[in-house]
Image 1 (cartoon, rainbow over the protein chains, first blue to last red):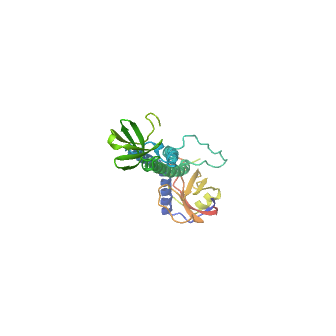
Image 2: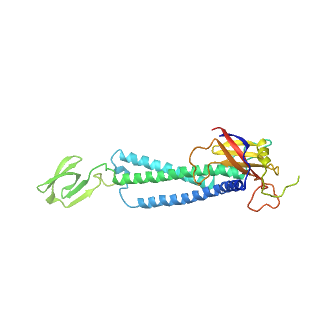
Image 3: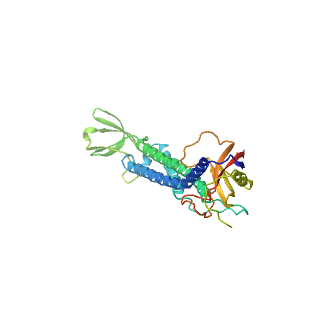
Length: 216
Length: 101
């Protein structure tokens, strides 16, 4: 904005009080922003910690067991959460403690006074307030993405249906159960459809995968 | 140079004298007035802003002209100045007219 200045109406004691109030607001502005940023940093940190604690509740933990494209989607959500969390953390620290670098002082203009502490403090307060707003948005975004990633991992569709491993004296058969009739269980195995006499089974187990132990 | 004592005072000539040599620097939310106090002749800068953190927001766009109450906030030690005050005590009003956004 550019302005032209001219003499205003005669001053009154109310004008003096208003000018003083404005100065006080500006003097107290930067400490207020810093204080608020510290409170937000602590609050949002506690929220994220709570989310991590929530993640300790056990659901599915293997992203690789998700049907496509949910696995890569969870990966993208986690990457987004990481980026948002890092940006949010940096912005909140910037708002609470200032920029971790020295600033360039403008070259002196003869006959003029460089900006005083109140003017400089107001400019910094506005920058810190902007960083605080963005930091809060980014951190809340991180929490949302993290929650979405955990929820999708828990409740997303599995890559494969349920598998059953049937152990008989002749060996173990593993596959997707198709039907049972007349005491026989029909399984879809890697080598095709197989039928097992359930009366000969010595063990029947539900398994997540038919891959041999020790292989993915 | 004699340093005047602190005195809360205004005069009709203060505003005209102050704005005669005033440098107005626009900021995104207002202006910084850099000038000399018409009473004590000390230089100081005074911030006019429409945006302060956590202050009740004012609806509408910034006005075309605004009357800004200004008080001397120079750093000179004026005798008799209360501990929580600034400047020499002089105050006046400045009329700011926005010429471009």
